[in-house]
Amino acid sequence: MSKTKKAKKLRRPNIPMAASPTTAVGGGLEINREAPAGRSESTQPTFDYTHIRKDLTRIGVLAGSFIAILVVLSLVLPLLVK
Figure 1: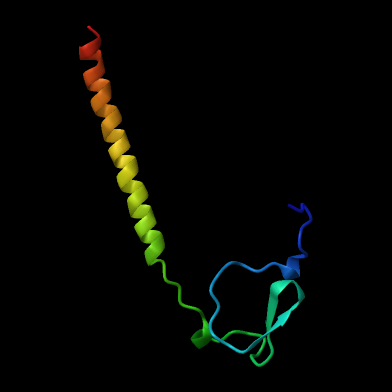
Figure 2: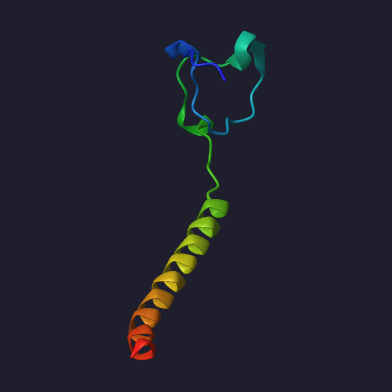
């Protein structure tokens, strides 16, 4: 794995882009040749976070169950040790 950093202008956030005509440039950078420099409100991408919400719910349920198991064990184990 290389430890060299990309130039700041070659870095892009990992977000889904709206469908538009693009041209690939070296390094995987895509430049929109037909759109003006500024984005209008209608071309803003919409994000779908349903899969992230499901993952966070699953993490919350697992964390809650592990904490409940630890509380039960902390109450039961001292009685068994006697």
